[in-house]
Image (spheres, rainbow, N blue to C red):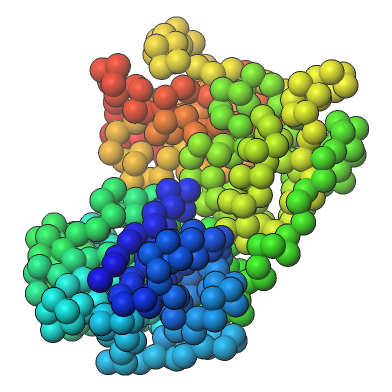
Length: 466
């Protein structure tokens, strides 16, 4: 058996290729599918099946394009209501890939149609060696039960289904069975996912907080209390996946625009998205631009902060960065990039247009200001659980989201404001949202809370939320 995990850090997404005797199956593919085709060809494999463990909400899948390119059959749970040609599978159904058998387990809970796949290499053993768990069981966590509300199920009902899927099926597997989920740390499909991208049933039985011995009702309460808000693009992506996304080759390359055109489009309400690193953005950017840097979980945050369908103008350091941004935006359904600033910020400056800046603040300087600047405001834009674990003194909590500007209404634009996150990435995005509100003494804390802790500076917990 040939087995490979493809891990996409931008979306904390894992997909898989399973092959045997000239045949292969791809499980949970990302939207740009060329790597699966290339890997299969290099290994002498023909892609026979494209399997979706569920209708993904956090990214657009490439299942229809991959099937069109390879002649593969798309396989998905019978309850998905998929509107593309497919094989609908139920509990116990099997797919044969050479001498490998993929046996379907219906494991609803994250979504109604969720399935897991037992991977049985009959050349080695009649028992499963691995299980591909989709978003049902992660390393360190389990799937959120609140992403299917629009389909007539409450989070409590979904959590009850998930309990049965875990305890009635997955936890009955041998402890040695390897667990290979569809997401890792940073995905919004879970709350406490580990940085590890695989595990075993035995290790999860011992260490996964959601698998600790508890009654069904207690499990339901655990999974439905204090859930972070789901990004607005999730339902849209799930529906795109239910129908099947158009191939990436149909997307037009964005036009190269001169500064005057970019300014005109910005005045028409186009979103100017600056994909450079925080320090470059802070040193000078188009006024009103949103900063989501390519160096972090770019696609997830672009999907969360920008409504799908918004016309976008990109600002990058070069055309290669623009091209990368276009692909990564398409992975979450942003297919509306209209253009990019030709020549980047140097061209903008040369044209004589106004430039906005955000000062980058080292943690040593933040500590000094906390001691000497009485009216300094500190805003922590990490998630509530991160904030509760420890934060810089005097910090208020308002997680990065489209509602940040509303939640920041209690801040005083006339007073200095330092914005902090874990490492300086989310905080830079937050400053770009806050700058148009009139904050003029605005600072992005370099290195974030990680740098603050590394310097040995004191933290507080808990503190009043914003």
